[in-house]
Amino acid sequence: MKFRAASDRSILVYLGEEIGQAAHERVVKLLRLLQKQPPSWVRNLQPAYCSLLVDFDLSLANHEVVEETIRSYGQRAEKQCALKTRVVEVPVCYGEDFGPDLKEVAETHGLKPAQVIELHSSGTYHAYFLGFVPGFAYLGDVPAAIATPRLSSPRKKVPVGSVGIAGRQTAVYPLATPGGWRLLGRTPLRVFRADRQPMGLISIGDQVRFRPINSDEFRKLERG
Amino acid sequence: MSTLLVESPGLLTTVQDLGRPGYGAEGVSASGAADPVALRLGNLLVENDPGAAGLELTLVGGSFVFPDGAVIALTGADLEAAVDGQALEMWTPHTLPAGAKLEFAATRNFARGYLAVAGGIQVDPFLGSASTHVLSGLGGCEGRALRKGDRLRIGKQAKKIRLRRINQAALNALKPRKVLRVTEGPQADWFSEEAKQAFYRDVFQVSEESDRVGLRLEGTALAGSATMEMITEGVSLGAVQVTPSGQPIILFVEQQTTGGYPKIANVIGADLHRIGQLRPRAELRFERTSLAVARSLWMEQERLLSAKGQLFA
Figure 1 (tube, rainbow over the protein chains, first blue to last red):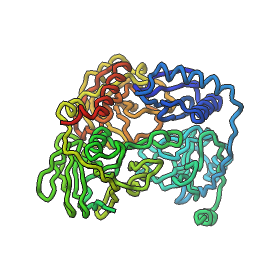
Figure 2: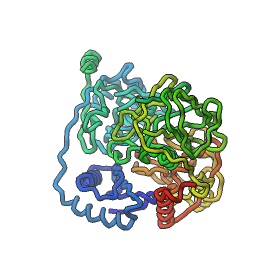
Figure 3: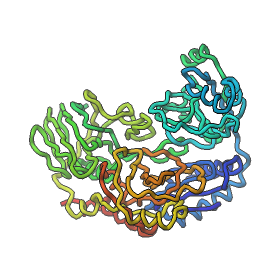
Figure 4: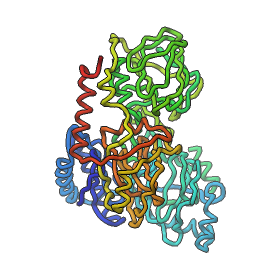
């Protein structure tokens, strides 16, 4: 466990040095323990691949106090048993208007669109963390055979439910926002709902699978 | 229930309170007033809780009608407000009669003015806050900036309003600065000595492409910073991240919660509200300080804001 001041009121806790499930499991265990027994000074917890950013109330604590407390939480978190994981299935209608970048991704890798769909939907992805906008889960790892960098200039508005890839990451856009990921398809499910707990369809630590559907099923599911 | 009617919304007017911290794990950044100190002072003047929702007006105001009257206070940047043609003094409460029309012009020096209303602006809260998050379209009034014809509810509040104003000494202590104080960022040692020297020496200019998500700065490119591969991590409010082209960006209230660019510095807590008053083309500099000094500046500021006796003239 390494600590680094991120600002005068936050500290970064590093729990590993490379992206992978080992470091991530330590992040999630520490996050869960801090959520369950939050010290009075915690203002916000922001997990990522190998780190947890802890924002604290400057009036109640300083970096030394926070570091010491997190260290002892870390030791207890390590001893917690393996995390229960939830499997989330996301139906996706690939290609056409729903996935405007599918053809180009296929061409980039000398594949047919059907092969890209097959590769993207055959894996089980790990939800590393939520970031960017509410409910946006960073999922990995996309097979190297279809990994494609972001668009050089992002779209002004990506339709809600779009499923995209960026490098070896994939994600579902929970809201209509700007975005530079390559869009392969779209899900009819509501990804983010403020009136649901949890609000996101996908939470940190989930295992996610994509199931190809046709446009008829898309419309049926969309109607709910 | 009394209301506020938007006759013309201005450039970007949103409902804001002190935000919703604590939902980072769900990808939600706190949002909230860009100059929370100004909003808090406005709320104090109209006897609201410090976190009551008001309106944040950006650069150019608009006009608003109070069909049932209201008690209001104007803080932050001066948008030259007038009621029915009569100029309205800032930093002090005013009682407006039924049907009063409040009109704003534009701010000359700073970026955001605040309209606090006794009883607060009432909207359905999202995660416990009325704050609008424009980028994700959540909170506030339908998750968006106000439009002509919007009608907002004003809460009931019957406290006696004291005719007093924020004193000049307090305003001086809290006013916007051209020099933002920062502590070193978590990747400060990724930058060359040369880049760091330039960062703390040179003047940067706020680009036109700046908003509540972030302020892009123009000036010396802080080159030589992108040699290492960075793993995406959580980012703090006020972090100064540097893009591969060497451009610094200050992450602001509607920031992404995570980011993959190295951060050279982070604006201190006591100066965060001053970021909210930087307008496009404004010039600024960065001054390095220690965590201990940053903390004492924060404590001092909070003491001033809570010791009401020292605030009022």
